[in-house]
Each structure stands twice: as C-alpha cells, then as structure tokens.
Image 1 (cartoon, rainbow, N blue to C red):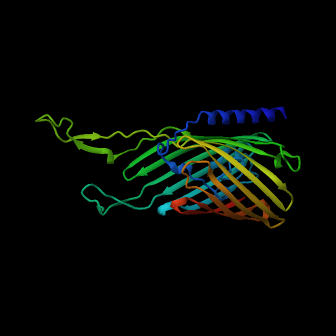
Image 2: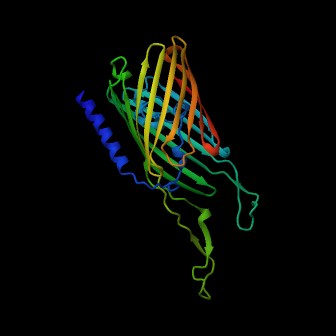
Image 3: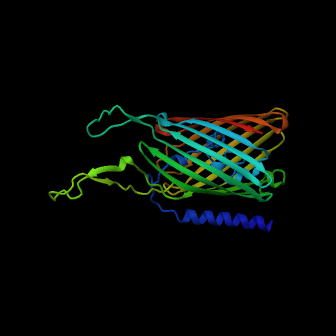
Length: 351
C-alpha cells in the first residue's frame, strides 16, 4: 500500500509541475506532423479521447504504451478514418503477449490525396499533381512491474513527404498505469480507480530536404562578369514534433457480471496549444457465451480556446469465439466544427 501511494504521489507531482510550467500564450502552428495528435482507435475516439488510463488493448501503442501490459491475449487492430477534405488515414497495430512482457508493432499513415502543382506563371495549375503523405512506424514494449503497476515505451520513426521534399524524425512515447482499490465496488484493484500517464512524441526535430530546394541564383547580382547561375540549396527551418503530456483516471462505479460502466477523464498539456480536458463514458452489456455490447460517449477539448472539437459518441460489439479468440468491431463519430464530422471504423481480432 505504501508503494502504491508513493507511485501515485510521483505521478501527481510530475503532472502538476508540467501544468504549472505552461504559459498563457499558445504556439499553434509551430510543430510539424500534427497528424500525430489525431486519435487512433474508434473506442477511444467515441469516448472523447479520454483513454490514457483505459487503454488495455492493441491501440495502447498510441494512447499509453503501458496499457499493453494489461492485455491477456494477442490482438491485431485495423482502423480506417476518412478525415476532412478527402484526407484518408489508416492505423494498424499488433500486440503480442509473452512471458517477457507485451510487444507491439504499429503503423499510422495519412494520405492527403492529389494536389495540383501551381507556380507564378501557372496559377490554375501546370497539369501535374503531387500526393503528400505522412506515416509513423513504431515498436512498443510494456511490462507489469508488480500486478497493479505497469510501464511501457514506444520507439517511432516519423516520416513526412511533400512533392520532392521529405523529412524524418525519431520519437519516444513513455507511459505508466497504476491500478488502485480506491472507489472499487468489489474492493479489488482491478475494479478500482485506474491512473494513467503518458508522454508522446518526445524526439528529434524535422527538417525538409529535397530537390525542390535546389535553385540557380546570382549570388552577387551587383557584380558584372561573375557566374549568374550558381547552384544553391535553400536550408529550411527545423520543426519540433507535437509533444503531448496526458494524465487521466478511470472509475468503474457499476461492476457486475452483466453490466459495467466506466467513467474517464484526461488532462492534456501539448507544446503547441492550450491545456484541455477530455471526458468519456463507456457502458458494457456482457452476454455470457456470446460477447459484449458497448455504448460510448464523450466530449473532447473542454476549456480549450477556439476549439472546433466537441461531442463524440459510438458503439462496439465483441463476439467471443473458441479458444479465447474474439472479433471486435467499433464505430465512432466526432464533431469537428466547421470542418465537419469525422467517422471512424475499427476491426480487431483477439487470438
């Protein structure tokens, strides 16, 4: 019990230090690859992305890698999320449970479609098109230090390509989860308050390079007789990744064999925006021998200035099969203000 209190105190102290160091001004638009801020997994999206303490499946590689340690079986997940202005995104992850811990592999890819090439002489287009895209490839590991405390980490390659220029970075995600017996309807830690914390996208800066930055220039335009077509290369600025600190709790006020209710709340501190709060709820109707039905709802980005985020909701179903295998299908729908509403579809296989 004393160790449990010490770990909780450390988590609260770290989170308080991060939030107290925040400044009133924001830095919107000062980071690259902002697709890293878009939530992955329909269950999490439908709960307002309040998932740092709830993550316990293959999508944990995005929200909190420590959640992988609470998986009981292998799992593979695939998500398709059609985003705004014909942007397409896919997410796939696999979690493999072993005696050494749980290993995860993940891929996130964003395709921005075909964009017409224009220049000063061809404002309506040159007839060419280019297709920007970005992706991350991650390797994760998580392990329970004790039955109620887990730690996890992910190493990621982040890549972005715009026409003939691209940039890459390496990043780390770190996370921790603590199960407590606070507010437990059964007195067991597994049903008590769960505390989660994660730091996402702590890594190197990105700088775009490529043949589009090669030009011919007269480096001494006021001098006669010098070479006026000298090959030069523009050097672009380095950009930070969107660093996100999350801390959250999940409670289970209703816990029975057939009905379970989970309430979750996350506080976020990004390096490129104001702090905000996400809230969510999940109701599970368990059907013995068949599976479970899930209903979810939430609200994303409470207290954030000028936010286009809002209500989220969704549903899911889990079909139990032989040998502890299962099929999971989840759907989410979230508001994005003037940009429209975003659906997402996720299919998972437990094996």
